[in-house]
Length: 268
Image (tube, rainbow, N blue to C red):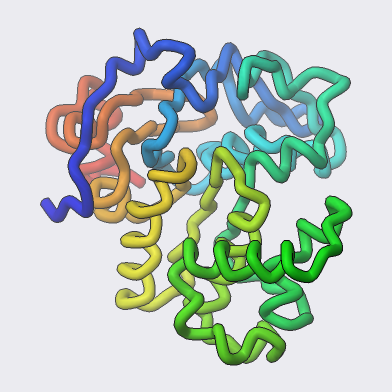
């Protein structure tokens, strides 16, 4: 099995608070009368890559959308339980969602650059925060593009439209846009499903580097990708967390037969 970096196994059940990026306690979510997540409890470690796998519709994307309250934008969304980030329950009524979403960045399946220049895309969130000094913006744009492994390809065309970039470049630009806000957590929802194999490899290598700076949670249908890039993997089925462990164990010696059936292709 290809390993992009060495993996250090942690005991998730006894993960101390200082090593926990996200703690989920009895999380339930429904849209109207439709129950989507059922009593999810898990601890996601800091500076590691955690993959969420499972059939389409099992609740993977809904779960990571809970980590920055994106589900609040959906009508009739009701959430119960706690999600602890930096010692606070982000499901509290007083949570500042603007601050939360800068702390917990999100990248979606298809690249969604704004119809503006590469430069303006990267510093969009910073300007919303009131940062206007050109030198500060210049430094932030360069840093974010370097972190997203895109600087060398675009440094001479920063003021061209972002729509002129290739699909893979656009996805890295969207990652740079999130990184400009210096998030502690980065959520990736099927970030390579629309990309070719070579560009997918670039994004995977980028993730391995980015985990030094932030915690990464990735949703993927590609079990080979999950086994390659993630330190930990959670298998969901019909809104329930079936099994959650280090990736090497889950993909080679799963505890639950349901997990084994899924990863061996007996269903899914």
